[in-house]
Length: 312
Image (cartoon, rainbow, N blue to C red; front, top):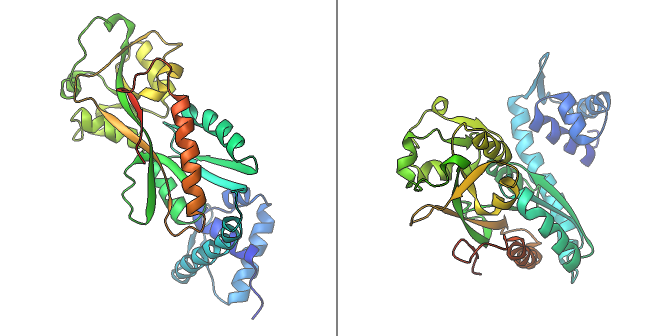
């Protein structure tokens, strides 16, 4: 049998993940013809067809699906060899691939990146910003080393370290500043603006407002907290945002901010990684540095009752 190369397996995994030669080639930083040739060589080496090739999309054959599962295991094991070498050193250096959810990344990452540069000068930070479900999948596939997201992650194979707990606040048009702040259930009659489906913050807000049963068409969904706040400023409705986003997102919009009556809605943001990762001890130390940075990143006007650092 013709030898199978690690490069071919990585290209195969990319094509299986994207289902499209062009996108897989872009993700792999090679040309589409070169990717096609590597896939053809892999199929020749194995003597089987791995993909059904359509005009716009490719999909795995039944055998290809079985191969894909094994290839993910092989690539994860290869990546862990490098992690073992890094774990044997006293300090954590080299590449750290960390994923962050969009409702945390813009507000926490600048401080975290600067803090890690000071505490671990040999660290090369690579950030992936996307939604929780995708981060958890990429974490299990070994494509990122750790993730910062809302806890609990709900996966017993992951280690979890709380970083901070923060409240959600109500953002309304400036003209409504003098009105009492309603409780969550009382927002049912308001035009509530929320992040699009897939954001965990959307689900948390809906639970507090007791609106889980609403159909998507009853809500106006957008893709960022910035857009939400600007739309509120334009008088299109009200929204909830996390405390850490308050200073950044409300400084250029004509809005008012209100605190909900107790019990106030909140979330705990934490860092997670695979318990089986050879870097587990080093990642625990990284989490300590990230927690310290999270404390620094808090709004100077915030009180401990609004945002508090999580316990160990």
